[in-house]
Figure 1 (cartoon, rainbow, N blue to C red):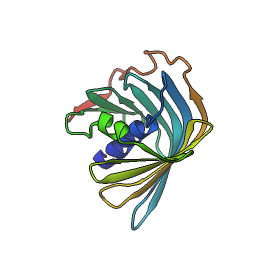
Figure 2: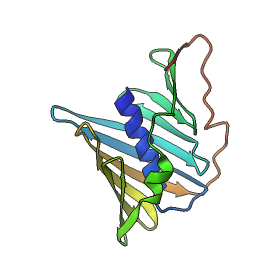
Figure 3: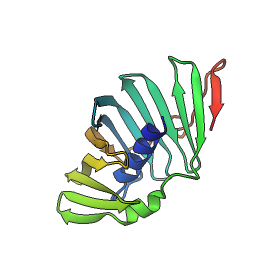
Length: 170
């Protein structure tokens, strides 16, 4: 679960690389390839420039992951649980973003904590983010129907844990 959260969090940072935006949203496919397996995740992504974000995974398992400056909240309806984690041990997204360099008109590279991120742009919007994490997993996030600067309500980006769900704090 931590590896999944860290991968998702780093991708949130990579979306912002050398982009100026008030908000960003898109559909996504995230493929994680390890030595032994490959897993594809599909869903929708929302982010505001204030570092709040929401990933809504529709498959393989439905879940919602909310990010703020200080916490990650994962709501898993099938398990009727919410996992709340502090972000004090996660990478500094500002450092990731500030290190992004333009390689070609449509390709950027960012490096943080010995992990290199390649960000492919199309028409000024992120299209693909590729990186290899510290566990040697190759991760590729492909975006489609990207919308920049459309207002996203704070209510959408605020976690709402349904009554009766187990709450796990890490």
